[in-house]
Image (cartoon, rainbow, N blue to C red):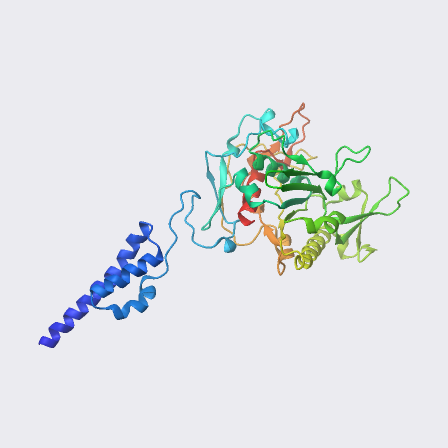
Length: 423
């Protein structure tokens, strides 16, 4: 009888211990207690109960500390950022957006993309931010970005959508404010306007306070272009699908972050208008499989991802990204056949992305097996058809809608926030 009573007392004591060890740590975690403090508490409690021999198994009983809610970043952080799929998440309203004024950022923002200076009257599209599911999205600010990029160079290389991302980043880094201290260093990268040209092939600016450089180089296809007749100004050009643009081969070692993009020039109209003739292995592609422009583009994506990856072994400081295609939103035709995108209502097709893979599969496949990262913005941007230029213009209406480029401030700002989270 006495043994039975002692047995029940011991069982009751063990149950009490387990209950305390399970419930109290949860309360303490909510109060901000660390895992080490939990261990000290648990060991002290066990000693009081005469069960100190269980102390070695405290960690197993208590379990690892769980991250607390982070009000500053508006998210419960449930996994490490390196494992985050930033392309999977939801657009949410945010009164702190936009991050700069479209009326003020005149130093960096082209008038043709500054919708605040046009006839547009709805600006709801400016007041949202992207929130990935289950991982941290650091709050962007110009000082934070410049601090992180101290003594570093960020290079955008691509088409006009890459130029929009570059201008967006310049506005974000300066807060849209006039910044006379920022230096034009385009000459260091050969970015000077040639005689008779409308503009240089790109721009480069240095922030002297942090020795941070942000640059853009125009390359619609990321491929090397070689004149076929150097004596004829109207010559055609060999577009080498398997060779990176010369600018990259020359300046890649001086970059710390590289963002590549291509896609919207891979059509017969652009190729014929620019007199581009496709080459591979140093020879014209002829009428074979590569005569198909989609296959040709995929070869270029694959080739440049492998080339950059091969260079990363000797450039450990460099982080390289391939940005996916920015979506078009033409309906009832294309840009030259009456297509339009007049919707002004945010999220008429939803506000959330749940898919695990990119909507730009060729780009995703191109970086697979390399150290080049995917900057996946396609599905996220697909939800924001109200953010395009549409028929807004500085001049008289032409009847042509721009459902490719974006108003700034706008969607490309999100691309840069996702980029910032990964650098």
